[in-house]
Amino acid sequence: MLATISSGGIWNNLPFQVSGSAPIFNVLWGFSSSLPDLGEVPNGLAQGPTGLFYGTYQSGGDFNLGGLFAMTPSGGYLQLHSFAETDDSDPAAGLTFGSDGNFYGTTYLGGAYSSGTIFKLSQYPSTTFTHLYGFDSVGAQPYGLIQATDGNFYGLCYSGCANDKGSIFRFAPDTGAVTMLYAFTGGADGENPIGSLFQAADGNLYGATYFGGGSHYGTVFQYNLGTRALTTIFTFSAANGTRPRAGVVQAEDGNLYGTTSSGGIGGALTGHGAVYGITTAGALMVLHKFTAAEGSRPMAPLMLANDGNLYGTTSAGASGYGTVFQFTTAGTLRTLHKFALTDGSTPLAPLVQGIDGILYGTTTRGAGKNLSGDVFRLNLNLLPFGFGN
Image (tube, rainbow, N blue to C red; front, side, top):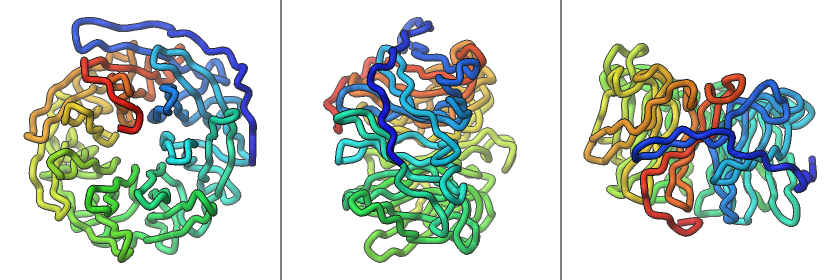
């Protein structure tokens, strides 16, 4: 389905700011459910070569099924597309910028089987939305895409396939073909993966499952694109964190880092969560268990910035509304910002570093007229860099 989006929309202006001593925190846009064309509950952001950020929101829009928006780094906002029940609906992840100059994304629901979709957002010569694929036997409820070095996109489905435990799939942008690569069984290999895959320097894909593994608290897995073999490299327990709701990222030391939404201090399912670092072979290298004062229940993956440090968010704890934190590969955690509802609450999506060096992110509640989430930036005086670096 093609839908050409008018480029003559009115860019809304920056509504308000919250600033102080360095690091400087700014709210760029507050979403509102009272204005359906603006949407609510934003996912993560992706920056294009023009410097604009593009994103999705989970609900709201013309049909209350989510939509797409664009934003300037200074807070100008433009509505791009409202999802409709006839094609795509309810996106649970942000967009991915492809090597062909287009953005690609998934919706959690919608499509012919109401199992989710893949879509494309083109920028040139006009901003055009294209429905590409509706999930069926390949899996259901997809969580975003990554583009690997072979040019194909890869992603995870939370459910579906013969075992209804989720899957790994491949999408070929040149042909439009979608292939199921691996169906999780719910045993040692885990089940119900959440979040995106990550391609490490060794060429393998890595990700995490929310359930399964020896203690049924989730796993980290490796998928070899050449052999099509999946290997469980790490199994979570109450001591090292449980129920990861996000994948991993590789830092400059070559190790993989991620978060768990629970476990650590406070119990297997009621704990505050943890940050972990493991080798690509699965050996635990570093572990930080959150305290209530530092934040609680990190839901988003970590982001590697150009200063070599990792950055992430907690969805609760501390002030009660979540935090932004810095984590070093040596295991040191520093809280950078505590949300206060008036400047946002409950961040669930990954941070992104803009080409200006500033960190950008979203919250799912707070700040907007109806507490429907916001877009924020956090200036740490990091160095700017060129697009794609």
